[in-house]
Length: 415
Image (cartoon, rainbow, N blue to C red):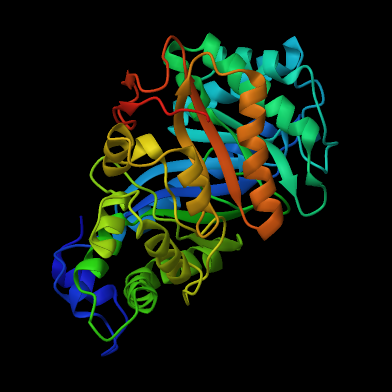
């Protein structure tokens, strides 16, 4: 991490810099991902991915030269059916396995975009679930989504059904159901989103930044002035801290002539970076208490009113088992799916990494995804559902994961 003197030198030369940043020993956030958007072709994907990998490594080096920690490098493509027409056949799966091996050798993660959306023909696809099982079985680094609601198509009932079948099939065929970590049903999710699995691309090659910022928001929470609103103070702290990241990204864009889409300012959590802790620090109560909704709204207001260029979700993330505090409060029974849907009315990514009973029916999964789609359609906002039916587990059962980025919790009930 960057030393204090170097960190201060990156901040704007302005008296408006919050004292909490001037006191920090290092940037209180990480660059979770630099994500390149790449339009692939069936005949040229190897060279196109190689060029993107070269760009990403150089961009990572540039940020590291400024002493920022960069966790992952990722590539997102347009919807797979747009460039690999035999995507569900043996030949298509072979190509995808080759892409996965390329990403493994280059240290990358790849999203092949939306398998169902209005542009490639929405609705139900009976082949998707079986294909997804084989993709998860034969690859390690490929992610994909189904668009269940969009501005062009509204709520897509057929896509909801396909997404539910896909989740159920992956849960039954992958150890611990953890294959669903690489799949999500998305609604109103724009191209250029750097976070996975929701990322997908449209247009010319570009890049975007995703951050892990709960420690930065925690500093803002701990330094909240009595005469300033939560939203205004968080926005001021984030703008001051993220300005240097934006300037570095803009310099990369000028040098490479690759469009820079912005920063997805969603505060993605990590094992030592809890957004649940931030919410509790501001509300003064355990997550799930009556003041949680108001706090979620205040943080969202800050994220939606930043001066830095933003992209993707740029909203409040509440990933249940990716966050130590959220996982703990779920295990304590302080909130459930209905509360998460309520909070999603004022924040970002909705039902993310939610552990569910292993025997959840396709119909019950459809109902959950349908609520997410309806909420997104009503408010024209980006939401997603990444659901984890856990084989052999019932509601209330304790659950542990092999994935080191997933926290122990309990299986949540579908009412």
